[in-house]
Length: 481
Image (tube, rainbow, N blue to C red; front, side, top):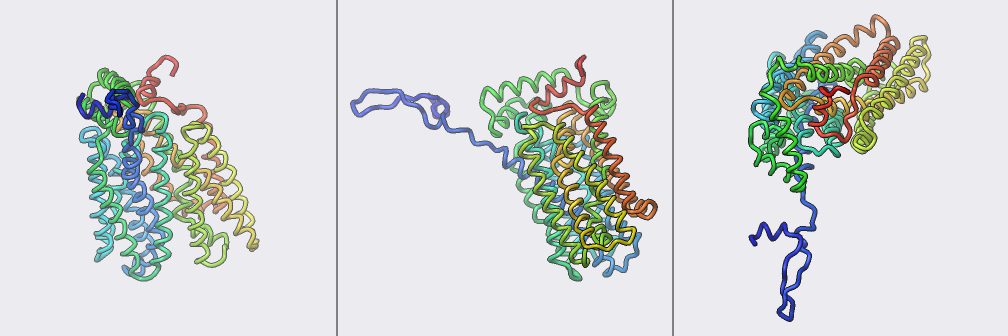
């Protein structure tokens, strides 16, 4: 018996003091197989951290940038939104490349983009160079937001997939919180350069770490590399039987598919899944989350919550709530399911948005009570918490689950482009809405959109808890779907 066979054998023969042989249990065979899955998830989720950090850090830096480069309001908007424009194009480019070159390679490439973009932004000699650098950072964010949830979903077993993909959203919330703290610590002229440059460190860690991670087994099967796919399944903790069973299911799905194309997105089964993915990506933005994150200090100042410094620290509190509430999704997503958490979260968002709008009605009437400022912070926190355990992570989870392997990269890139496009439009129009229909009217509008979103999710979005990606794929073309 060879050494590898001996390690895997449940029983081995050993000599006894009397010279006889006796069977005993092999300790190596009873030890649980160490899984690479937590490490894989951590390195992929670093892209989420950079997503949150690079989109959040601008809020505290833009004032100092405006002073240094003498920017008007429009130019400040261009600096702020350049990263969103880059993310839109990055998401679009990642679809075909993820299907062609693999998820892992794109995440390595995104890490390199973060290093280059962050370093260039920190060293920018003028506003044009800064806008270009932020656009490059956006390309990395767009790639990561498309590929990282996809990569984690394809590596994870069905029983743990929801919680592991939700780790990506947790990393986003941690990135936003760290950005708030860095902005506070570096709130002096020139500090914004250090704040931007610090993003190069996690970018380098992602580049190096992902270089040592395996490729997605489902992508490997599509490349007819079955032996490599089986080895990856074992590395992420699957037993021999589990690995062979899942590989057989993947081979069966791939055998029925030809190479995917953009036209396949409109085929009957895929078109239905694409409609759900696009609507979820849109819903995540039109319910107002990024306006609250981007403009939280302004909202709290409008609520007369003490000084501007108090407003900044209230924003840090909101970011902390965002992180903590995301842990609820990670803990319970695979236990309670996607739809129950979405229902609970959207219900909380609806109540919070209408209550927040009501608070601003009284503020607009001239009430100047400190209690109203505290109420505004409270309702923003309940809104953020409700989003953080529902729409925040679960949209990325479901979008990473519902598409066939042959077009998964392309389909996710379309949904992600819609997400970034809606993010850009909502962020661009928020202050105009406030001018036209007041702060209270804007929050009530988001509340009405949340009501419609809840109806759509209850009516059209399938529950994917505990189902393999191949089972979800088959459900779109089954008679009962």
